Image 1: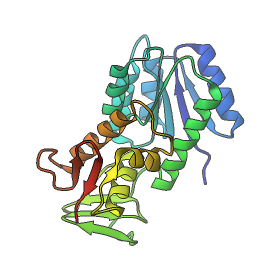
Image 2: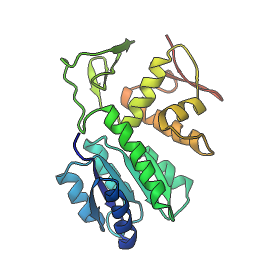
Image 3: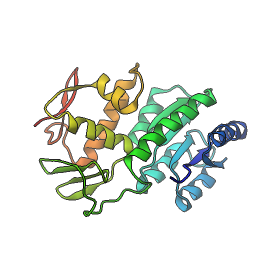
Length: 237
């Protein structure tokens, strides 16, 4: 397997360099950027497996960089911020971020979160998802939705759906438990592989909303994912 490539963006050079050292010590190929403009150029010109983005950059902010990534890429993104703001977190998740850390943080915790996101991403598939029909494998199919577990692809009415690794993991877990109501706590622990905490419910909710949008699923009259208020989510048989 190729060495995972990580982009780290922060205008605080001391932080960026320190994070780079820790990640390189783990064997990762790390690219550092100190401005949003440099990061935007790197995002467009190079392939990465994960990005760590500071929100509060002096030129192009982290949210704009995240939008640029999500126009074409599904690799995981971890957002950094000096503000412990729920609004910032929800905005980042709404734009497609996979994780969120508040400064000051422990470099080893960031490394652990990078490892967790990369594990999910590499198990999800290659850097760019293939939607080739000839990629045969175990398939879950119902109501026009098809999930190819070997190719890690999703289609709705035979049209490919570009999911992030987190969105794919949520959909697969719910599909594999069709007919059962999956509590939010169970879904979070299974997909994020972390303990459920205050705020975790919002994290799940935002990712479910994104997933529904991509599937063309109406929350008021769901075709696929149904919300059981106060409990969790289900895909009915």
